[in-house]
Every structure is written in C-alpha cells, then in structure tokens.
Amino acid sequence: MRKSVLALAGLAMMAGSALAQAASVSEDMDVINQSYRQAQQATTAQDFKQALTAMRAAATAAKSEAPSKLQGQASDSADMKDYRHGLDLLIGQIDKAEKLADAGQLDQAKTEAQQMLQTRNVYHKKYR
Image (cartoon, rainbow, N blue to C red; front, side):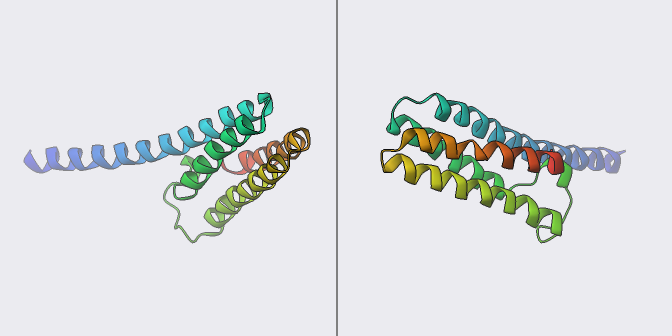
C-alpha cells in the first residue's frame, strides 16, 4: 500500500512538472502575442520598443523550454533545434524592428514587425 502511494505521488509530481513547463511556454507565447499587438498599436517609438522588449524576453525564456508537442524529446533533437531556430528568427526580427524604431522610422518598424506573423504561422504549424 505504501509503495502504491509513493508511486502515485511520484507520478503526480512528474505530471505537475510537465504541466507547469507547458504552461510556461504557453504563457511566454501569450506575452509575445499580446506584446505584438501593443507594438502594432504603439504611437511612439518608446511604446513600440517597450513592447518589443517584452517580446524578446518572452522569446528568450521560451527557448529554454519545450512546447507540449516536444515534451520528452532530447534538447539536441532536430525538432528542438528547429523550435529554438524559430525563436532565434523571431528575436532577429525583433532586433531589426527595434533598430528601425531607434532611427525614428516607426512606420517602417511596424511593417518589419509584420514579418513576425509569418514566422509565428510557420512554427505554430509545426509545434503548437
């Protein structure tokens, strides 16, 4: 009986850990999505850059996690590398848009940021 209780407790802890990690990826993606909307609605370069900063932080955090579809895969598996590559692409797009905003080109920065939607669509099809 005691072994059964311990085994169930261990399974519950492992399941809880997997759910917590999946929730973190989901939360990071929600932050990216919300921040993208804020960036597109920004009327000043400062507001735009603030939204991009939140996006970059969430994308960076998501790189250290695995989406639920990739749970259990080795961190050096081809799919995990591709998942992180998608986030690296997003971070590069964020940096490019931020440079345009720094140069006072807010409209061009917003146009550049629209490329992020294409990146999202490609990688959501694979790993969502």
